Length: 165
Ligand SMILES: [Zn+2]
Image 1: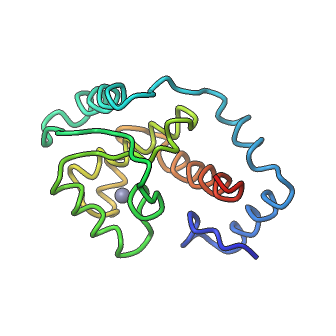
Image 2: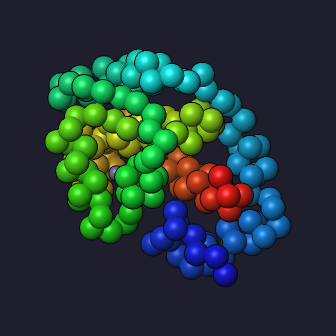
């Protein structure tokens, strides 16, 4: 039984359901149907503009961004989404200190909604280091569908890992 590292902390019956979808090779198609819309944010410059635009709209008063880029060395489970554990503290602290946002390169090819989710997540860390209640409220302020999108992004990453991507 493969462990689902992006779904750590979620209920076992739910993980079992996901394993079933993976075994039947249905998860990718399901996500593709639900999120058919791609995005055009390819370069680091475009990613910076995209992020700055969201920041201007929702977090105008927070610290300025020094840098925004795609990073192909980023280990998503530790640094992009965080875990439902104390690891998030280190992760948030690092971002706050550096005031830069790194987005794992897999999101370059991801559905538009998942890029938005990850950028919203990282922007929220400019104000809240931890994955606490205030953090998630801020995420939902920027993207009302945030919680569903974070879960579906985890499914997306799970599917990629399953395919060896
Ligand atoms: Zn985080």
